[in-house]
Each structure stands twice: as structure tokens, then as C-alpha cells.
Image (cartoon, rainbow, N blue to C red; front, side):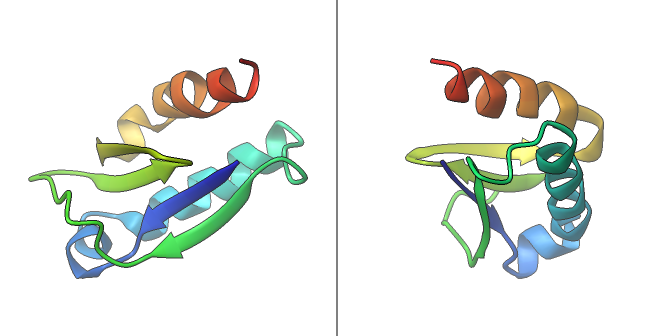
Length: 83
């Protein structure tokens, strides 16, 4: 699985650095280092008024913030790995 976090200027200002760190921690905590490739990307063109854009394989999610990260990771990353 490839997880891309937008680190373009808009997402950077909305906290992409924090989201990248949360992703690193979650991947390590769940021992998914061999199953997930975490990469940065520039603007995906899906800017949202709040939060960061993340692409999980071919699916794009917008508006990810620290407060919603755990739910996002559980529902969009972990769930996809177990399909």
C-alpha cells in the first residue's frame, strides 16, 4: 500500500508535518513498515478549507486533521489492508 501525504504549501500550512508524524507513529505501532510505503507529494488539486489531503493507493481523502487522524487511519488504512 502506498500512502501519500500532500506537503504542498496549502497542506503544509494546515499541518501536514504533524500528519506525517502521526502516520509514522501509527505505522510503527501497528508493525506495518513492510506493508505501507509512506511518501510525500505535492498538491493533488484537492485542497480543502481545513486539513490535509492524503492518498491511499488510488483513493483520495481530504480534510484530515490531528483530531480525526485515528479514525481515518483505522477506517481507511487498516480496513483496506484487511480486505
